Amino acid sequence: MKKRLLSLSAVLFVAVAMNAQTVKEEVKDDAKTVGKTIKKGAKATGEGIKDGAEWVGDKTKKGAKATANGVKDGAKWTGKKVKKGAKWTGKQAEKGADAVSDTYKDVKADLKKKN
Image 1 (spheres, rainbow, N blue to C red):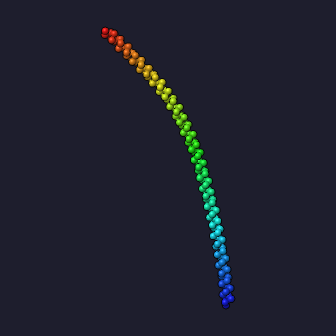
Image 2 (image 1 turned 90 degrees about the horizontal axis):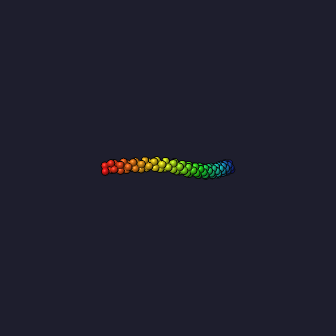
């Protein structure tokens, strides 16, 4: 009976030890899987950050170019309007000068008539 009990205990001990070894291997495999997943996630995050940085760089360049073109076009438009405004102001000044001259002549003529 002791032999049977001892044999049964030995078999049970071996079974528990094998089961523990299996669990240990499963934990090890799970740890490897988690490690690989973390590496893949980190790599994907790094690539996402890199792609995002490239996208921001491209958009910044395009924005700067568009701003430069907008400023250039705005300067041209302003230059045209300033020239047009100066021309109009010159014409108005000329008309004003003519009107003042005509009024001066009329006043001078009126003064001669009265004297």
